[in-house]
Length: 605
Ligand code: PTT
Ligand code: SF4
Picture 1 (tube, rainbow, N blue to C red):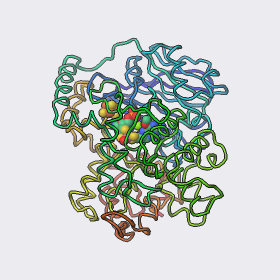
Picture 2: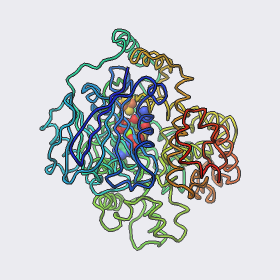
Picture 3: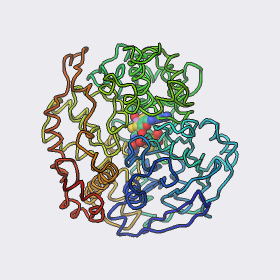
Picture 4: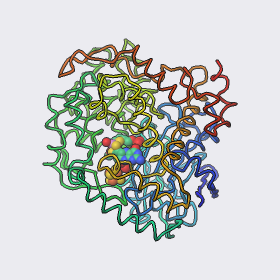
């Protein structure tokens, strides 16, 4: 078993392919592991993310694209224009299946093109096509044009005007509703003038034991379908979280100042069910969780919890069709809904406090729409907000940094953590900046002492980070069958062996997860040098200094001293030093000796 990498140089318009063997797979698996290793090896410290020296990795793994449950995913990674460290995102798309069918597991783009380009990947390698007619179009229009050009069976990854205009949180879209790369991967494509990548394979995917994989898959799909939670999940998908978060003061409301929203019922999963006209999802998945509704303009929009929470309550908007329209606008423009909702909410608060000369206000759909449009086009106020909340707070000053809701410059996803220290730590230590993808402990905290800063909680966080941030990002498959309908983790050991012929257990997968965490942390430390410090793992001041003023948890907030102690204990459990840097011993044990020379100075300061 080998992983096959297609290397595409956009400057010279040449390509070649390389192979990575069993040793590499055992150590890094694929997906995020592959991307982190390539980024460590090939992107030198200090490179401007928008320069041609930055690279973009589109990485599948040993399981991605295979006809097994929810395996139609890909990781997209680069040096992030948002965090200036390692950044990635995960997308479900036919691109995952077609990449495999074309005979590759991953593609790395280097250099940049002078003119807009569309790269088509097939069994014949990479083909460079003129993309003048695509440039300037929104993501839906681009996908329609690409379908005409390369056929509807192909998989496409496209950017919108947001990516072309280098919005720092521009994302990559596929299938008019799948989004991946909120760390600015769309802007990296834009900086390389890469308008779209399409994939179309004609080959059969070679796996170690096809018969065993097929029989496992048949059984596995059935098990998922028979699960108790399957019906509810396919009705509500991630929208089920609105009620849970609102009931527990975790629903981001008016720029995360509160955790309960007065109109939550109108935008929750039950209200959505009444409006739902269809559902969609990723290939190879029988849980199809994309909820399609009609927005205020009667157009289709695909809803997820994060999108609605950030473009609804976080902006004071309690109308689902309006939030859906903002969701659709972000999808067409190719910008991340989470960072957009955070940036617009931040500006509304700044306007309310007279820090900026603007009359936009919470609760106004028209104001939100105008501001989102401005971000996509980089017009007026939108031009500043396209830089993200941290950079904007640095410009606006007047204490606004305290309520710029980010960690490491990446805007926080839709969970208010005034009373959730574990989730706050998960955001603080997420390897790509504040994202919930690697760890989501809200429900666990509710059950096991929500306001505790306990060692047990740290173990729970580590376990999430190892599995969600490690194995699932490396395989690369969707984690939701496991999380949402209780699909047993043991299946993945079997899938892995049938696909690769390599026998690894969850203990081995967890080790890979820890290795990747240390490697990504080393990328940040190398990048930030002496500026690196543990403050970078802290959530915003608002959660420490501005207690909730509403709801059951009124008056509560995080405790800074306890959080710092919690963070140090977390570092200790990871084998990192007091500055949050992996120790020499840990790096050696994890087989990462090669990073030592480049972070030694920070390690021994
Ligand atoms: C992900 C982040 C999320 S996570 C959501 S909703 W979520 C937002 N979706 C956006 C969107 O839509 N449009 C848009 N313009 N911006 C958006 N930004 C937000 O991006 C997604 C699902 C979901 S829905 C989740 S939790 C799970 N995420 C997985 C993951 O990260 N890894 C993995 N192995 N499996 C996962 N399964 C689930 O996939 P980022 P998708 Mg996404 C319209 O990209 O950068 O990681 O940010 O991929 O195909 O849309 O599936 O309540
Ligand atoms: Fe995609 Fe949802 Fe299926 Fe996961 S559960 S693969 S996000 S459709």
